[in-house]
Amino acid sequence: MIPNIHYKDREIVGERLELAKGPLYWLGPDLTLRDCTVVIRAAARSLTLMSGRFIDCTLQAKGELKGVRWARMHLRGCRFEGRFRGNDFGFIEDELDTWKQGALMDCDFSEALLDGCRFYACDMRTIRLPRWPCFTLLDPVRHAAELARETWPGLFGQVTIEGLSTQDASVVALTYHAPSIAERQETTAEELRAVLERVPWVVM
Image (cartoon, rainbow, N blue to C red; front, side, top):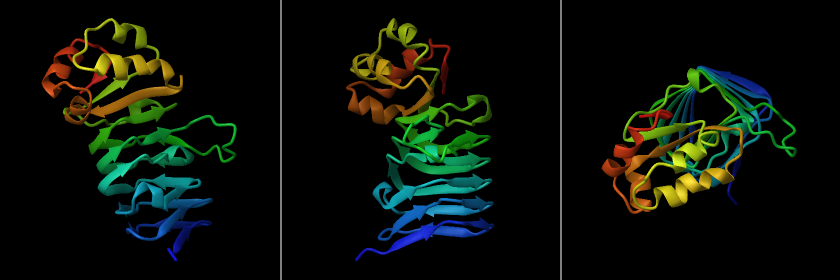
């Protein structure tokens, strides 16, 4: 039987937590990590984020961490390192979510590789984003029509830009890794960059 490790109803300060492959991890409810280093070797399917607070922590993904929904966690002053694909950060209004604790502020992703990551209902002015070859579309839903008027290479316009109409209105930023999405959408990072440089709502 795969063991469960449950961190809840406590505050942990200044420790190093290793989330190894194998166990199932439950974080929360009523968990606070402060000034901790959290090393994540576990796959996303082994992580259940209930609710809690990460304050001034470093979160290191040692493999590519796919599809984690951080939106139930309050993240403040945290630093992210490693590869994150399809992760959601911030606060998502969800009628099934009774915790209402999700938030993202003053966090640093500059040393992370983000691909297909969404930021919800947070002030992106407080967030340090990764630079090229990652790029971030700011307020992508609001700017969807303007973005659609650009001539995008490969399938980027048909898939990613047209897909903005299906995103929740609370998505305030989308970050991609140019070489990865270029490979998936039949173009090159250089061709993408040539168009992105003309768009004022891009961080790269």
